[in-house]
Image (cartoon, rainbow, N blue to C red; front, side, top):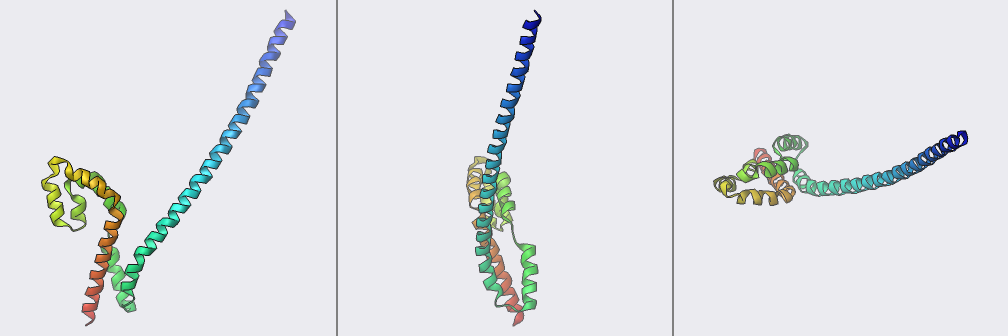
Length: 162
């Protein structure tokens, strides 16, 4: 009987040892796979960041062209006014996503007539559907608004110069 108990005890220990080895090797493989996925995600994020920077630079070139005509003092005034009045894409997307059915994002972009139309027809939910679609194009909309703003500020500064 003692040998039978010893054999069972040894089998249990062997099973424990094997399962620990298996678990540790599987866990190690799991960690390696997770590490690879993490590296892939970091690489994708880096690529997206570069693309966003390039897009931002393209937009800034139009505004920089407007600033080239200005003196140093006028550039400071331009930058001060522009930074205070410019709109951000993230705010536009959030407004269109959550309050777009009421046209709040249109009012925010100083588009009063479309904003009123959205407000009048909000009970039909059609403006809400349109606003969800507009979320996808908000970057271009905000960039165009900011460019028009920059043009107006530039004209205002040039008029003050004369």
